[in-house]
Length: 341
Image (tube, rainbow, N blue to C red; front, side):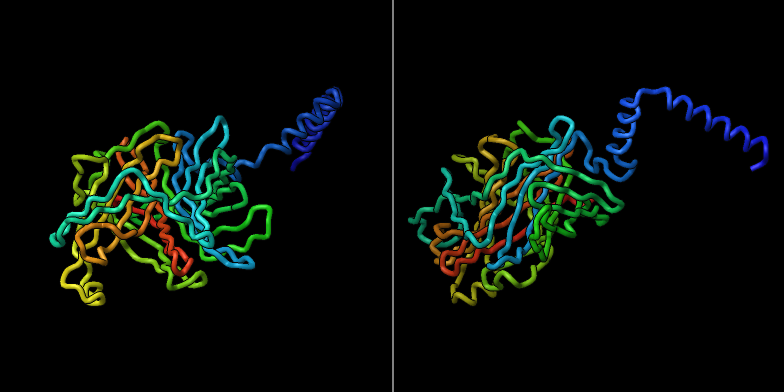
């Protein structure tokens, strides 16, 4: 720095110091407090668009004195100038019971005397957590979501499935030990007050599922594979809002049970009441093991949250929770369906 420049620098510095001394101490302290409270630019900001919600499904194993698997299905949404979350939690150790609904399955198998009666659709009621405060912290690969007792790390999925995938979960403000995290999330138009109808359920969806059945136990790893859901195959009912689809069982299952013919039934039910944000689609399916042509045996229970873009369902995130009264360990899954981008 040459002499004239150095002198100019010192003159300006001295001028600023004199001006600062003229300010009341209260104003100086206020400026310092605001500068400390404000986060550095780029370290904490909203990773979700302010006019969107985030729909997510997640699962993991908690290593407690008695290890268990936990599933969650929820929505992060804007509330005033902050973020809030509503979610349902499904503890594996509780082996949550099924709750019957007012509608029956309508199986249409090409066998049986059809003198039997289809069973009622059922659902699973988790532990509900409503309108909790949430923090969304952006990072280079996605964002960190802090809610309640949990801190989730989500990374953007660069594959054709898009959305976000869960890469880590840990306790927030506690010593919770979490293992085997798996989850999926998508930004969605906020569908509060939007009624999903059977006519919205159209088209073919690719999918991914992470699964544990009652035989593998709590400690085993997730079994991950591709899946799909084709709403075009479902028929509508003339007497109820239930949509149904029937297909032949896999040949190895038919041989295992030594049956000449066995079919699988699927029922889908759109939300029948808009009771809040978590308005699930229900998908219940299973084998007709007694081969009487009716779905009078309990199947597997999926709860799905639709993701909306332009008023159209572009993806679904879901959990599957099917209780087992014999072994006391439910069959569980975490998954998503999506239209490839």
